Image 1 (cartoon, rainbow, N blue to C red):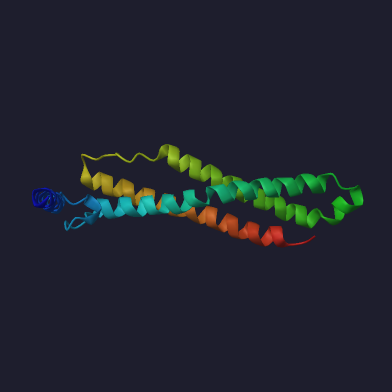
Image 2: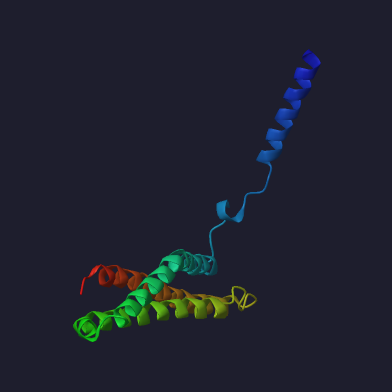
Length: 155
């Protein structure tokens, strides 16, 4: 019985020491990040925030379009009374659709491996992409904020 315990204990120690010798993942390495790594992180963070809001953006587009459709079915006098609100809904829908379009366009055009053999050119590319994705993220967040305001309003 003692032999089994000793063998099990030795195997446990062996497994633990093997874990300590495993290479660290790049995210946890002690190696300082390069400019390009930092820029790529910023680009990906912007993308992640924007993508995280796309479901909500789509729902708000549908809700806005539904309200526009509902108002269009009202009698003429009621449609006329709702005209200013309908104008705000039309503007909102345009903003939401543009935000979605801009995200799709950016994602289709972004090339993660662009100029990887020329670090200076890659840094320039990533800086431009950081600016683009920041603008896309801003469009999405401001569209959602505008929708929260407009859709709460009663006409």
